[in-house]
Every structure is written in structure tokens, then in C-alpha cells.
Amino acid sequence: AKLPQPFTAPLAIPPVLKPVRSDADADYYEITQKSAKAQILPGYTTEVWGYEGRFPGPTIESRSGRKTVVRHTNQLSLPTVTHLHGGVTPTQYDGYPTDFLLPGNGGRVRVDKSIAQGSYDYVYPLAQPAATLWYHDHRMDFTGPQVYRGLAGFHLIRDDAEQALPLPRGDRDIPLMICDRSFAADGSFHYPSIDPSLTGKPGVTHDYMKGLLGDVILVNGTPWPVLEVDAAKYRFRILNASNARRYQLALDPPPPKGAAFTQIGSDVGLLERPVNHDSFAIASAERFEVVVDFSAYPVGTQVTLVNRFGSGTTGHVMRFHVARKASDDSSVPSTLVKRDPLAAPSSVTRSVKFSRSGSGYETWTINGNAFDPNRVDARVTLGSTERWLIKSNAHHPVHIHMGHFQVLARNGKDPRPSDAGWKDTVDVLPEEEVEIGIRFAGYRGRYVFHCHNLEHEDMAMMANLEVT
Ligand code: C2O
Ligand code: CU
Ligand code: CU
Figure (cartoon, rainbow, N blue to C red):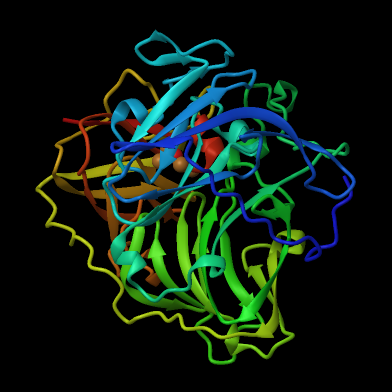
């Protein structure tokens, strides 16, 4: 397909979903998962699989501690699983990869313990601080293609401590979902077919082994969009929803006084203190909440959000056009919120090694094992804090369900400035050893941890975590 001129289409902001009802106990939402035609490239239609037929899906906004019930109805042709990424969620609602929701237009039928048909109510207690979470498909072995077709959306949690801060808000608080796609000649999403003639082995192509990379960068579903901004501060909730691509984000031109981004939040909530970055790396599934002050630029400046890891079409993400002077009473205080400190880790140190195993069918493994839903790989105690040593022989964004963590060291040295705060995903580089302190506060039951390169995840780089 013919690619558009960058920086012509306006940035779209996903609509905020309204609850269908609220009572003393909870807010209730309904989402239909369905196929729809979207205009992504000018002059082409693209079939998307979307929550409410949209890509990105509608944004859900919840209050911390307020129960949120989302009834998902599957009108697609295949099973789905919905996971709230970053949520502290009871296991039956966490989107375990085999807890399928089968397509069906009939009523809600519970086929067996873990399979539903038609609709399923995901119940989220959200007893956790304000954060930028996201929801996406998590079907065993097919998360990559299903997310690629569009099954991803934001779920924001707000709380009083956050609301009391003088941060940019309203129209100046904007979620940005960044992902890459490639398109076939007819404008459809191009996910490489799994062609055994390429390798002699079913299910494996070379591209697919590394994770899928596209040549078009989308922000909130639009290729290289442009946003007109006031010469004022903006809060951006940046999510890398790409299947496999990492970005090194920077502003071009940089602001004259440096510090393009003031980071105020990480994956699962606000930082205690802001951290300044000229640029930062963001791996698949990570979130960075940053404040950018466009008053540092003369009115009329075009400021491009660039990807220093990219080249050609992938070196650009989106553009801001500083359109006008405007009043701005927002600020970023030097202390933001109080977060629970990380408790001293218990005596348990767990070593988890992410590596490729190459005999027979090539696959991606954790501690030498391909994912098996029937094997417990790590048994942890509810309420405990453990030290994990994550080792890797390639680049893997490592994500852990339910347990939130802090990065303590990389190769025995201080973590990166962009590792600050509580996280659910950590960017692990080839031959790196990353030490984290992880707290299992939440619920007992069966969860997973996995590589969030979705092709690696689908090729079994996932393990079971049993919280007892
Ligand atoms: Cu974002 Cu287990 O997933
Ligand atoms: Cu998750
Ligand atoms: Cu990986």
C-alpha cells in the first residue's frame, strides 16, 4: 500500500467509555469485540478486530478502589482472552491464556471452569494507585496476531493523591499508544503467514522468530499524526503497544534548555519524584508518563517525536505543532506522591533465564522450558517480597502479572534513570542480568510471567506463577 505523508493526519484520542450503569458496589461497562472497517491509510480500508470495533479500543477510566466490571462480548470468529495489563486482578479475571471467551451471540454460557461463550464479566477491584494500564488480548499462542489486528485499549486509574497534584489535566492529559504495523498492497494488516516452505518447520519464519516489525508507526491508530498544542505543559501517557519494537524517544529539536521529558509516572503509577530525560528507551508494554513543556519553544515550532532506534519511516513517531500562546497554571512539583516502599526481599532469590532453545522446533524458553499451562514454574507466597535475577541472551521485555516490582540493578550496577518507579515490565538487553525486587500483594492463584515480545510469548516464552 502507498504510505501517507507523515504529519498530515490529526492525532485521534480514543473516546472514554461510559458505564452502562453504576451502583453502590461498582461501575459496569460493556465491550463488544468485533471486526470493523477502519481508515488507517488514506484511500484504503483496513479490517481491524477492535474492542467496540475500534483500534485502539475505548478508554476506560476508573477510580482507585472502585470495582469495575467489564462485560466483554466476543463477536469475532475466534476465541479471545482479555487481560488488564498492570492490574492487580483475581486470577479468574486476569486473562489466563487458556481462559477462553468463545465467540457466540447467545447468552452467557460457562462451558467449563475456564471457558465461557458469548460474554464474560471481568471484575476488577482496582485496589491500586492511579496508573496508566491497558487491556489487550492474551489468547494462548495467538496474542501476537490478535493484538496486531487491533485488540488493545487504555484503562486509566485515577485517585485523590493524583488529582490533588497541579499536573496538566483535561485536554492536556493525553494517552499515546505507539505501535508499528505493516500493510499489504490492499491496505490490510500484514502479519507474515506462517509458511513452512521458508524454514522447513511449520510455525516458524525468520522474521517471526525475532518478533514482528512494521514500517508504519501509528499513534492512537493513525500513521505519524500531528497534534496542535498550546505553548504550555502537557502530560502524555506513552504506551508502547508494539508487538516487538523498542523505541528510543526524543524530541527534535530538543528544547533549548534540555530535559525534553519530565517523567512523572512508570508502568503502574506515579513516581515519588520526577525524573528528567533528554530521551528514553521504551520496550513493548512499558508505560512512561511524561510532562513536555511546549512553552520552551517559540510559537510556530514543529516539534517531532523521534525514535532514535529507528531509521527511515520508523525514525519518526508523531509531530507537535506549537500553535499559540496560552495560559498554563499547571506545574510538576518536586515531590509527587508517597508510594509504599519496597520491603526488604525475603531470602528467596529466584533466577529466571530467558533464552532461545534451538534443537528440533526452535522455541523461546524460560529456564529451558517452553510454556506448559500444567506446570508450576514459580510458587510464591502472597504478601512476600522476593529478589529475582532475570538473565537473558537476547532482547526481551519481561512482564510479570499481579506482582509489581522495582528494578534494583543492571549487571550489578545502578539501574537506568528510566527504570525508576514501580513497574510490571522491564526491558532486558542481550547478555544482561537485571535484578528486581518484586512484591506479591493481591490475590492467590495462578498467574503468568512472560516475554512481552508477542511473537516470543506466542512461541512459549511464558511461565506459571502460583501465588499461595
Ligand atoms: Cu500485557 Cu501478560 O500481558
Ligand atoms: Cu499483564
Ligand atoms: Cu523475548
